[in-house]
Image (tube, rainbow, N blue to C red):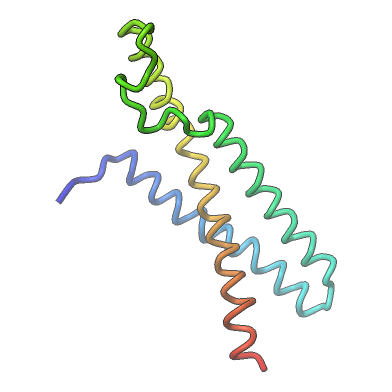
Length: 130
């Protein structure tokens, strides 16, 4: 079994904590809005989360140059480039992925929160809250 590096363990813990926080910070205001019949407040909460998710996904993709360097081998790069240029190009792509890894600890909890909300809206609500 492969051992996890301390950095990956830290990212996993951060991912779990962020997921719990994202769910709580999302569901508590929605529950409050549902109890008080303030649908505009619920709409503002949902749109805010959607804007956060969109912003972080776009920032991640733009910073990583839309992931076009991921999986590229030196043989696929232009032949007129020197070996140093190829190595620098590939290293820059790897460095960008590593440096932006923290953004995934925000993107995945927000996606998971919307997934839970969709399951609640489309499966739990219609079948169990008649």
